[in-house]
Length: 207
Image (cartoon, rainbow, N blue to C red; front, top):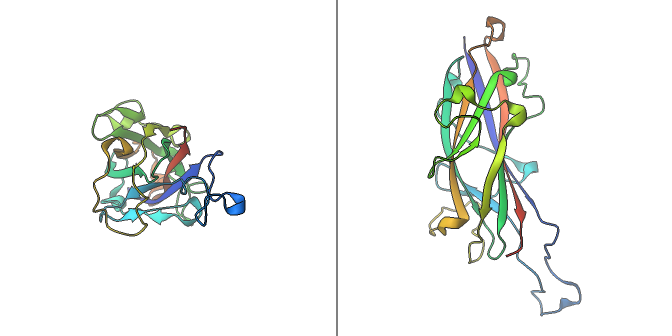
């Protein structure tokens, strides 16, 4: 039995107290306030990606077409606070795109189990075991906290450019994502697909 996976990458930012440019040009042409608050990821080719929810990016996943019952696809990705002065309380989720269905293919989304682990500390973020992806969370529960990422301390890095500047250790984290297809899938789901998104959400906090 074969199945497949489509995963895109989305980033959301929130922060009700942010100020972009103050009215009346107090402080001159640049105004008063903070630069845009954002978080960003580093793609496998070492490119910086600003992915807004409405303009998601495709995240390449090795072996994505080899997802069969009982098998796990594993990949890593890096997220960082791309803001000069504001800390970011950051969450990560794996969510279905719509219902998770892809065209007329059988929808295997209900049979997917998600595990997310901090790649550096081995801390469990999503799921029930760091080493057994069969115990991963269902798609309805596949979200967790990455903690607070500190600000960069220098201007935001531009979108679409190679990452050449070392990131402050506390402003970034790398996660390992395990997507497991349960052995309980029946033959009627042969050729099934799931459309998923890896979503990061950052909320600005008081420095």
